[in-house]
Each structure stands twice: as C-alpha cells, then as structure tokens.
Length: 85
Image (cartoon, rainbow, N blue to C red):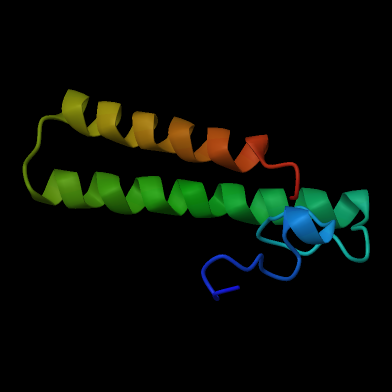
C-alpha cells in the first residue's frame, strides 16, 4: 500500500476521529470552552486586520463592513460546527 493510500494514524479508519486537537484523553468542558474562546478571539483579530487593510485602501465603509461580517460569520460557523473543540 502506498503512502497516499494508507490511512493516517488517528484517522477514522484507525478508530479515532480527525480534528485539530486530540480527543485522547477526553477534554474537560472548561478546556473546551477556553479553546473556543481563544479561537473566537482569533476570528475577531482576523476581522480587525481585514477591516484595517480595507480602510487603508479607501474601500467604502459599507463594503468593508460586509466583507468583515461575512468572513467572521463563516469562520465562526466552521469553529462552532467542530465537534472536536
């Protein structure tokens, strides 16, 4: 079996789900909340950086707000949909 076809250790085929953080051992609820809060702060930081870049480029305010809001909602949806955090 080639390296491409062989399942990675920790994959679904090895009995574990994939995700950013390991589920072994199971995380406490407080740790999971902390990870989500830190990730949410990262989303706010990304939105702030995008907004600053668009404002520096003299993009209209409504367009800047639309882009930042859309990206923030998409990133938050991906974050909160994750069952591994």
